Length: 221
Image 1 (cartoon, one colour):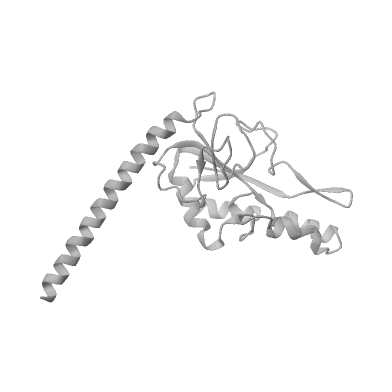
Image 2 (cartoon, rainbow, N blue to C red; image 1 turned 120 degrees about the vertical axis):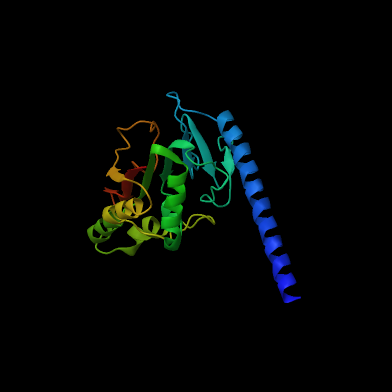
């Protein structure tokens, strides 16, 4: 009787696995078709903007947790991308998004972002730079109020909390440990597919002075 129960359990497990694989392939086919119907860049490249917020960027497929007329994909979890096929995008862009993810999930998430990029594709990231935050803290005579928002997020809605900090060396190391072959700085005022302004180029104003806040790194698959 015990062996029969084990056999039935094994058969049920195999059936669930087969059903799950079939369902996953169906979802991927549907998404591959849907992606073909969504915007492309003028040069034919396929671009994904994760956490687009209110930014309307030319040629990008926009993904965000909050709906909007320009948002093509609305999802409560910006990093659950299993519906997107492998090698789907030439560029994935995120500005001040990755810090909203638990530090325990950063490597896993970067690997998933690497998966959906084509070989030679680029993950372009902007995050708050912890070294810039320390500079701001020291320059304001250790005024906590000056660093509350860049360090911990605006906290004005459910998704706007920070759970991770980065500096240049740490972010590059995380990228290289996630399957990317190189990582380098990028300039939001002088690069392809960035004809808009967001936190990648903004500064923080405090008592009449402007302070750099962003770390801009892109990784090549």
